[in-house]
Image (cartoon, rainbow, N blue to C red; front, top):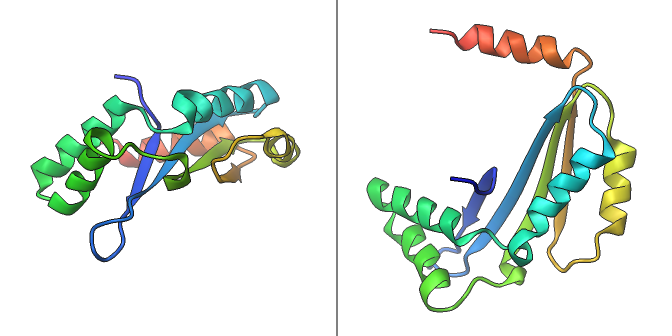
Length: 140
C-alpha cells in the first residue's frame, strides 16, 4: 500500500479540531532538486490532503489500540465533514550527505499552495557510513 511517509495528528482537549501533519521523507547521498521536486509532488497530491486509504489505515490501527477519540475524529473527516486544507500542514524532511538548504529554500519560495509548509534538512557528510552504523547497531 502506498501512502504518506508520515502522518501526525493533533486534537484539542475536547476531542475536536483535528489537525494533520503530512510528511514526505527523502534520503540521498547527494540531495538534488529532482528529489525535492518529487517530494513536493507527493505532498501536493490529493490537493495536499492525506490519502483516504492512509487515513483509513491509521483509523483502523487506532481502533485496535483503543484510541476512540482520535479514531472517531479521523472517521468523521472521512465520512461527515471532509478534511480541509486549513487542517493540514506539510513537512518535507531530507537526510543527505550534502547541504540542500538552497534547494529547499527555492522549492519553498516557489510553492504557491495554501497548506503551511515546514522543511527539515539533516546533513551527515558520511551519509552511507551513518546509515550502515545504524543498521549494524540494530541487528538482532
